[in-house]
Image 1 (cartoon, one colour):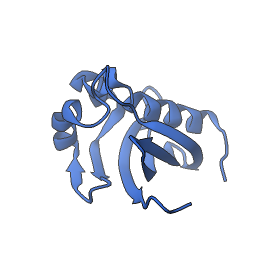
Image 2: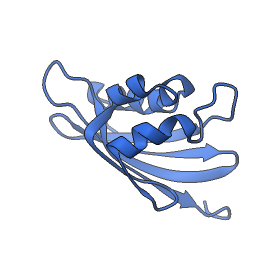
Image 3: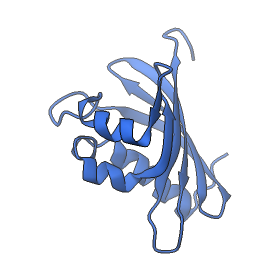
Length: 128
């Protein structure tokens, strides 16, 4: 169940920015959106740390300005606690689907929302 709060909308905006090739190819822009304690479990099953992701992001899918882009859909989100939003959504990348879950946190009134955790699970081609 999605509760469209300002916090949820801000987390979705951050998620969409992380899919933007200009952000993916810029370590300084990506750093603004990733929490220093960031961890990801990718669709491949690989575990990524903050430093690993910042180093690899410019080379990962979706970083080329003229290349293919992730197609996100079906965002839902909920404010779990003050400063903590959980998002779920689906992406399509060159015909491959993944279900995604991320936690966004905001630490302090003047801080921006940052992705704290992300997980992607591949969706088999014949699944609904």
